[in-house]
Amino acid sequence: MPTRSRVVLRPPVAADAAPFLAMVRESRRLHRPWVHPPADEKAFLMFVQRSTSERYVGRLVCLRGTEDIVGAISLSEVVRGVFQSAYLSYYGSARHAGKGLMREGLLLFLGHAFRALKLHRVEANIQPENVRSVALVRSLGFHQEGFSPRYLKISGRWRDHERWALLAEDWRRR
Image 1 (cartoon, rainbow, N blue to C red):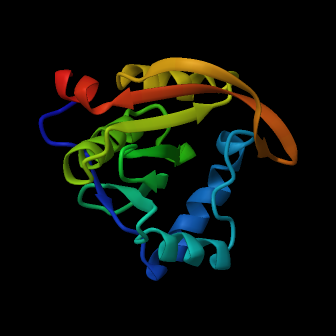
Image 2: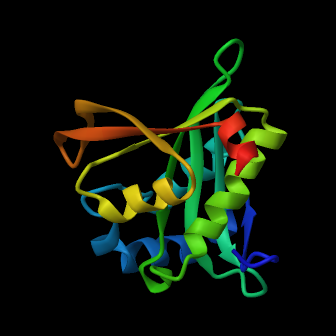
């Protein structure tokens, strides 16, 4: 990764609706059947509102200088107490796919998760056929912990997922 990231993270705001939804429309083939990002203004505004709650953290990944939306990253089900854990999800723009920009965004986001939010564990659940996503988390230091048959209902079907996790101490050792 370059010393200065090509991307920045920022919370989504209502004014991002049009460019975000355009990115989602352009990227539909890339996202399916893996994920279903907000596809209309109402769903996007719910993402904006949810992005500042205690149990959810959402950020847009934007190109430094242009603010072009590269993708989105979120932590859901943030649990405190003895657990200090959350679930990671992300999706990128087809226009920027394969350039390493989402990887840079995830590196920034994970730094925030472990340093500022003081999480101990971040888990990503990925359909085994999503080889690009599996390769991405593996490159970030995640370890496969298991397999969950029919774990999440996506596109109307219960789908198998691999469980990948990254712990704070592994993050610090990178």
